Length: 382
Image (cartoon, rainbow, N blue to C red; front, side, top):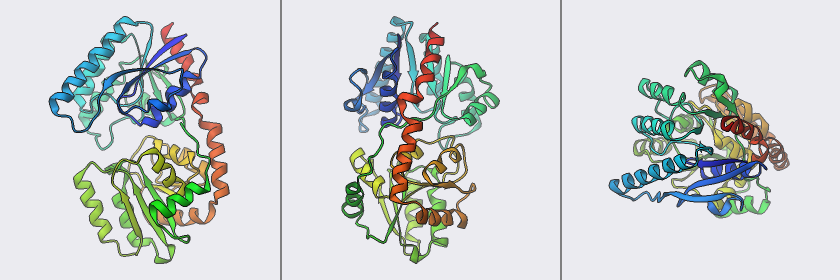
């Protein structure tokens, strides 16, 4: 039996829960979730043990409180690693701190104290931070763990070619899906009428997730002003908080100058699961006009609700968009991108969306995609 401690480090909560539950479903794996006060403990399987070492993640904490919390956390899990030498410690996402030097420090400490260390690499470099120093630091960091987990072949190739990681230290595991929607028409109606207030003839175009520069919303808004027609009757919904004040101001300014009559609704806050499920059910297409990405959990959220995706052809998005009846279009947001949205809205039906959900269930259920990882765990322990 392999014992695995999962350290979430602030990545998507739904991903963390799905990963833990899928891993616990393997007969030869004992799973312990290192949790914080915002971990979705209620959605964890009964077989997943919980250790609340991460403490409070309340955003209003002062600097000293944050430093003390971090020091206590590091002391706790490094101490645990010394006591439980045969266990796997899987960093399932980002590091505890985001700064380059802090990441490097935590990585060296992890290599010092943890015997069996696994790191999931969701993006090769932090979003909107790809300078030379960052690349050098992560080039060092990626050589330290016993095993790196990635979700695409392209990322594996980049780790080998760009960062010099040994091929035998990398395992590819598909990005799983935590929950699959039953596509209840009542959720769609509630989302459209009660949350969005849109008419029967209007089509909902959704941007989902935290608003960041690499997601290309500014370019998309400019393109809609140029190429969306009043007869399209699109309602553009931005469902995600923007922590970057300059980016928020820029997006708001561009929206104010948009003269095509397209209605825009922006939920500039964290979207709770219950509300998100109804927004996704109410949406007709999801747009991902990303400037750069390796892979994205957002596209799997779309697949779990059968929402077709129109995306730019960056990273590995092309491998998944077509599964839901969507497509990738070039590497910039232009008339062709807007046209692809228009075509997708004509072609994908509610029945097609149900088929997409079932197809996604076949490919991306966590308990299935994680089976190869357990063999890799056993190889490290042995």
